[in-house]
Image 1 (cartoon, helix red, strand yellow):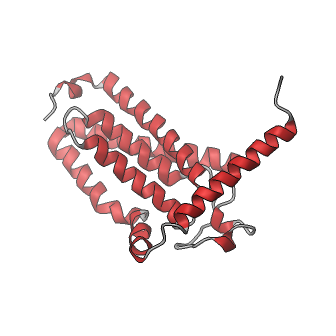
Image 2 (tube, one colour):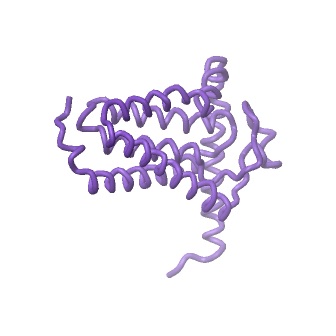
Length: 203
């Protein structure tokens, strides 16, 4: 027996309610002066510009022509995840951001400029998880700490999006899943076409 329209609508409403409750638990329940200062900084892309510049220089200096390819595929990975999230999914789903929802925003703490874009999926989550998992595929045998460092980095930036009031948890979760899939795909394509890079033993 199929699910009736009324049952499907009820299930969707329940999921939205749960999503909002988790959002409030993070946006309000975790409120403190340290997070109020720190998390807006963590989710600001300019904060990480020195890291990106360092990685570009490091990849090219350490791996030469292969390093240039790593930088190029890193940029492609970012472009694919951002294109799918920002230009395809968001413009198709058109979910309103919590900070722009007239029936909900009075209940939340808005800690950054809200912006006019849509909420689902989170491009911050998609983009950072795509980079994280691309780098994990490339370097997990070379750098033993890369897995937890990359996942922690992407998670902190993503959760900060909830704390500052611009995304719901479900936006973050789905953005992260999208980013992971993109990062794994580009990583394994790199592995297929540049297999010599992966022959170095773990250090």
